[in-house]
Length: 188
Image 1 (cartoon, rainbow, N blue to C red):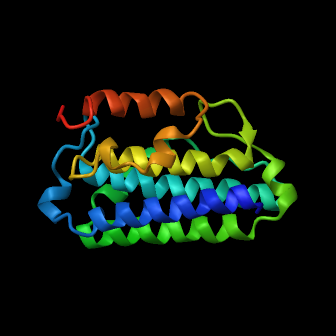
Image 2: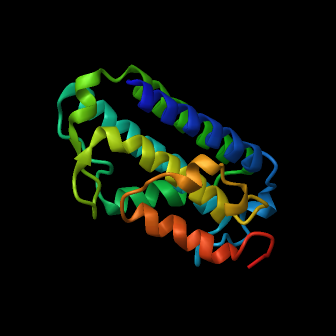
Image 3: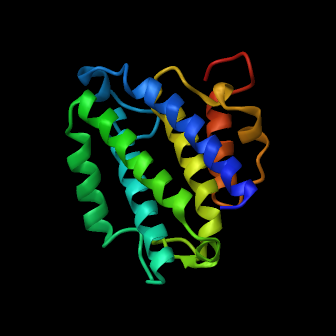
């Protein structure tokens, strides 16, 4: 992991701690409330984040071993994992998000330099080098934390995140959340 990747990993750690701070105060009834994403409960958003970390971890394990890994065994497997996780209690979901994030962090911190150049495959996306995975994880954590609709929004994002150069579709996804939030000092 080079210096830029380590800095990005530290930003992910910070964003994850903020997310966990929110996740740990959500109650079981609060988890069943709708998130900012149509059709997604807060529990579903948290389960999505946990399964996303697992998928990214699996991709990095594949990059480390030289195997062509995929993020998910299939769309049905992905959906089933999220659905199952979303049925968990508030305590279980917060632990799931924390555990999956730590497992991803551990693999990322141990990945040899050459593995960061291995191309990864995520269904629906053009293959990309493993080095881009950290930015994708940071975006996922920050955007979905805001999507919870639980007091953390784009106005809370660190300046480094709002100014970060992002590839598509991440740039548009971040802008969508900014548009939902409205101008600074207002609520959507």
